[in-house]
Length: 279
Length: 265
Image 1 (cartoon, rainbow over the protein chains, first blue to last red):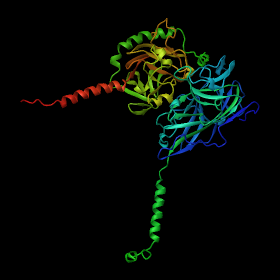
Image 2: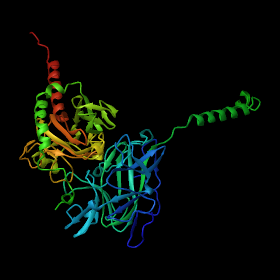
Image 3: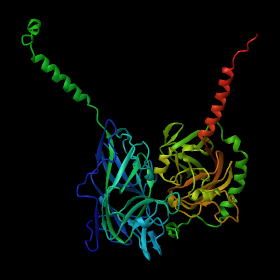
């Protein structure tokens, strides 16, 4: 899966792969980060690396789940139903998400509001589209398999990203982009010139603001745009507030036994008499 | 000019005789029965993911229905299927908005309030409102061609439009009429086979709307199949209106109680 190093732009948030919580932890919760996972894209006819599975022309979801207390990113494609699953699930490292010729958009002038893509006049912008469009991958994100009972509700405080209210959210952070051009992750907005931008490697490079908040338990669709043909590696990290685990039954039993043992060791002869205490 | 103009959009076709011929008579019948088929006992879909779906349950048995995809129906998480007449789709007051492309599609001003079920899960969740899609996921994709959803009749206290964000024209809209051969949009929508898609559903006024939707397609061996059902969307009143009425009733009641007893000198 290695990328050719020639003409490759490497943008990274920081060397440290730990995303800080954007807000104070709600009571009884702890901030948790997943490992960093890499999404692989082949845009505009770029070669599919040997051993990788090309995923194209299919409803495909990037699975962003926290289950068992840890987050993980996988790719599912060819599933017949959004909720009940099916299809094929692969680790993100094994799937090559294809932006084929139908994803190419000719840009004469960059429309107002779309400068964030990094597109330039008289160029091609490759976009995997938010709406179902025949002839290309229909790529969303999906957290239907997250164990909701392990997550704590929190308010990211970012209404512009549909995350200004209390809910169980998974934060998706852009950590790095490696490829020949810029990457952006966005949704169409209420007005034609007001898209909702979650991630853009063009605006200020990759920084802490390149993040999305996904209301857990469902799925959603986005536009995934690239300014050049070629192979891209996009690093994502998941974060959320998890419930602080209650002491287990075993731990409580062990504590009880320990206390009982200490009490037994302390024989009556060792104990101070009432008269001694009075002294 | 717009970025979205450059996208490949295939939904808006000028005319589809097959859909029109099959849909119109059934739509008229369905509208005539609206008040009887949607009863107070219908389950109420209030939030989360659900789809209006096209299924095929055997020879000449197309099934046009609502399928909860983990959405909230009658207060509970549901993955069940519901007949069209058995479900009410609630459009809450939290979905009230102004401006944007929706206002234009409804034919109202930029500062006029309208109510919109959102296309994206994030925005729908922020409104605590339904995240409603259209689905053909129950179809064997290899068996079908030319599958589409058409809005074939409509009634309601205001206008309705279904559209996708970023697009310069609506998919379904009533402001320019429904099922008119002269209608440039000819209100139908294709989501392909074995697939689903999402859109915004906008309503210009509070009240009960009845959307008659004809789903049709060509089965490889059974030929053209079509099913028409009417779906009930309920746009709830603004709290301020209800609150004002309640406040008025309360004030009247208080006034009656507070009236001093008559004193006879």
